Amino acid sequence: MASSMGGMFPGQQAPGQIPVGGPGGPSQPGFPGQGVPGPRGPGSNTLVDELEASFEACFASLVSQDYVNGTDQEEIRTGVDQCIQKFLDVARQTECFFLQKRLQLSVQKPEQVVKEDVSELRNELQRKELLVQKHLAKLHHWQQVLEDVSGQQRKPTDLPPPGPLAFLEQASASLPPAPLKPN
Image (cartoon, rainbow, N blue to C red):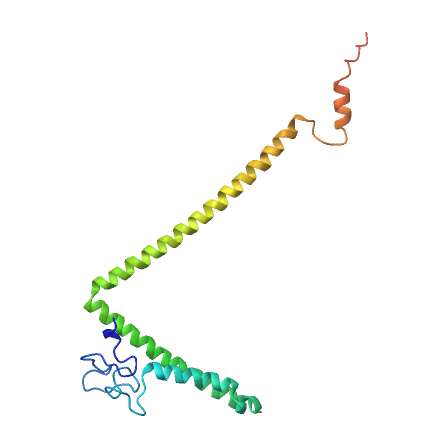
């Protein structure tokens, strides 16, 4: 995998790397593997260097004294927007680089891609299994609480239901029946 990352970092270039524009075609400045081979010369940047520099420029534009003391809000907004747009462009180029390397890897070593997919699926399955276990534990807890509550409600059912006439009903049940009147 380290050899497929050639050109991304200073002093590295993949063997037989073909520029993005094709052999002999136009290439984009700053793309990995297209700077000066070997040690970097002045002015040759890798994508990582450009990404870092554009991020620092974004951050600097937000905390710069020029922008803090500036009165023209539109000028400040335009400068910050340009810095952010440059950062996003370099980030897209970096993403493109890694996608190209991923494509090369999938063509050269398809079994590696399958192994990675299987590993990701196993990890996802473990994560979901833990989630199911967590939910089952909560379910068992609440079932126990429900059983405890329903068990407590069953015990008082032997007593008369509470209410304003409950005492009278209980007292009248213990009295002998009233004699019947003859007609």
